[in-house]
Amino acid sequence: MDSDQKIEKIIGEIDGQGPSPEADGLDSRWKELEAIARMMREEPAPEPPGSLGERVMEHIRACRPSIWKVVGEVLLRPRTASVDPLRALRSPVSGQECSFYFIMVGVFYAILGVVLMIGLNRLGSALAPADWVRWQPLIALVTATCMVAIGLHVLKDGKPALRIARIGAFVYLGFALLNGIAVPLERDLPVSAALSLLSTLIGVPTGLFLIRTIQNCGKRYAQT
Amino acid sequence: MKQIDEREIIDRVLGGDREAFAVLVDTYKRPVFGLAFRMTGSAQDADDLTQESFLRAFQSLGRFRAGERFFPWLYTVSLNVIRNHLGKVKALPEEAVGKGMPEATDPSDGPADETAARERRRRLRRYLLRLPLPVREAVVLRFYEGLSFEEVAAVTGDTISCAKMKVYRGLEKIRAMMEADGFVDDEARR
Image (cartoon, rainbow over all chains, first blue to last red; front, side, top):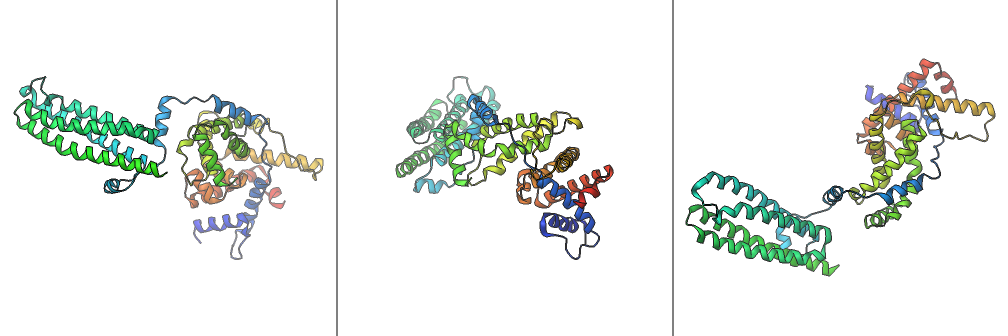
């Protein structure tokens, strides 16, 4: 019998199964360990002071969590989120799912903003400061912030936040189209054409997808 | 308490009804206090730690998962509070172990039996407090709190076999300490 099996056997015996017939040499040790376990089991539970419950509740009533704690709780709260965009286009989706897509679009634009910032920085003096192209990284970062903010708003408030989300999605769609036109008009550079294409190719389908998702989210709330 | 009731209470608390938390406090203050007392050996510390545990549980209630049982979750929160506390404070002097705790007595015991029983309990508490913290947790949860090995493992974050190993080691260590003090034979004969 290896040591793990011995332990299993002794623990089983202490747990009330009694010593097994083949427990060679374990009998006296089992009795001692069993006696210790019995003493612990038989010891009466300590009584808490009578006022303990009331004192706990006083702390609970006085508890004012910090804003960081509240934000952390909202973000860390367990929730289920689907990642099935095709289904989101066809059938009703939850507020959490809708919020998830907004936040994901925000994350995408945050990354795009950083990439553009680094990329345009390398172009250096080829672009004048006032150029529309120059503003692209900032536009991407502002879009990211707005999308994440809308996503969190939908996550927190649900149905009442859908109106803001719808306005945000339409503004985003319009701006994506405007940006697609404004960039190539501004300066005839290969980079501006690429940015225009990027803005339109990403912005228009994403905007339409978000609008459709909000519609489907509204249907879900109407059902419940 | 049924799980469905707990979920309902938790939802009410999360919805802003703080007073609903009093039901959970009343239901679980005794085991949480018991756990803290066994782990620290001090009634005063147990009192403070019970308050801290419930406050921490209240603040973390948003992370409590649907379908999870509240009691093991609360035990895990309490155990973390107790671990933090024990990590900061020095060990309790032996003479202070169990101080401030009213002793429970068995009415069928005579005065001599009662004194002997009290002495046994005091001695056992002393041995318990000499155990390494992870071992003490497992022993307390299993024998004093009456949790199954599955529950002990869930609360401490161990595997079931690891929980069993800790309990076994704890008992063996206590036995060795009793033996060194010349008490083991008395207890085994009882």
